[in-house]
Amino acid sequence: MDDCIFCKIVRGEIPCFKVYEDRKVFAFEDINPVSKGHTLVIAKRHSQNLWEIEEEDLTSVQLASKKIALAIKKALDPVGIACMQLNGRGVNQMVMHYHLHLIPRSADEPELTLTSWELRKGDMEAIKKIAERIASAI
Ligand code: AMP
Ligand code: ZN
Image (tube, rainbow, N blue to C red; front, side, top):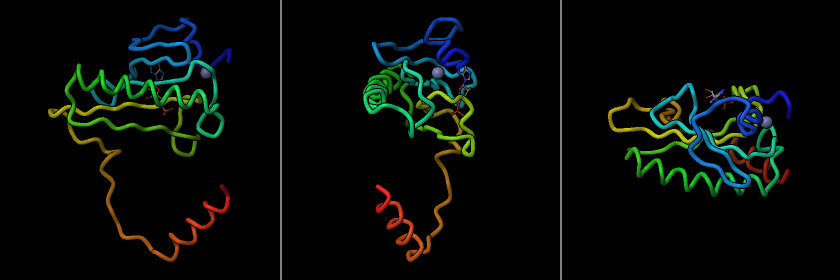
């Protein structure tokens, strides 16, 4: 995609802090890091999100993310790593090129707000109905 910022990074038209590259995948540091080591893993081939990405690219991103997560563990010794991926403007996807966020948290960093939602007991009947709707759509 000509005007996609992440495609431009893959093509070397915009600088980045690259941490990994293979035939299908590219990974670099987020320039607005939520924490130390916040890394983005993308497929080189453009697709917007989970609804669009080719299975082959999705698999490649997941396999590379394991490699990179292990490297982050080795390099930064975090207490955990959150893997997060946003789909659609309605959940604040800002860059419309599929990317997986690897967000490590070091012991000296504050808790990640995205990993600390409040647990509130749901309505079992409503959950059952929603599950049935989703299952029958698969
Ligand atoms: P999302 O809301 O999931 O679409 O996140 C997009 C992410 O891309 C944000 O965390 C941005 O900080 C990051 N980002 C945007 N432009 C760049 C860039 N040129 N280099 C590295 N990260 C970027
Ligand atoms: Zn793109």
